[in-house]
Image (cartoon, rainbow, N blue to C red):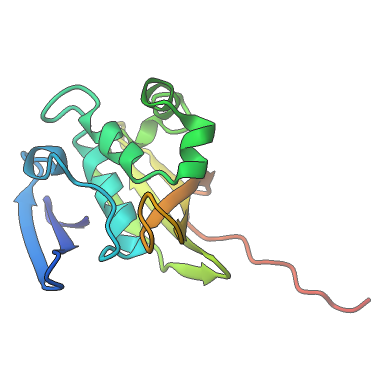
Length: 174
C-alpha cells in the first residue's frame, strides 16, 4: 500500500497481465476487499511489503488478526518453518518487537535494494502510540512451488527509526 492522505493505493497484477489500481480508505481493509489475496508472480517485492503493511494497519478487519493472517500468506516457506504455524506467527507479531506494526497509522517506504537473490526494503512506521519504528523487510523470489516467481518475505528485522540501512564495510585490503 502507498499511504496518501488517509487512503491506501494498491497496485495488483491480474492474470491477464493488466494492472488494476484500487483505492480504499482506512475504514476498509485489504482483508475485507481481497479475502483471498495470496502471492502471485505479478507482484513486486515492494508490492508484497505494501500489502502486508496495509493488512497490518487494519489488523482486526474484518475479523480478529485478519491482517496478520494475510501477512503470513506472504511469508516464504523458510520463514513459515521458523515462525509458524499461524497461531505461533500471530503470537510472534504481537510481541513487543513487532507489535508496533499492528494498527500503525503511517508508513514511509525507503528505496528497495537488490542484493544477490534478496531484496531489502526499509520501512519506518508510525505506531498507534505515535512512536516511529523502523523495520527491514528481506524478500526472496521463489524458484519453485508453492509459488514459482513470487516474491515472499524471508524475514523482518527492527532497524533504527531513521530507516537507514547499515552500509556494508568495504575491504580496504589492509
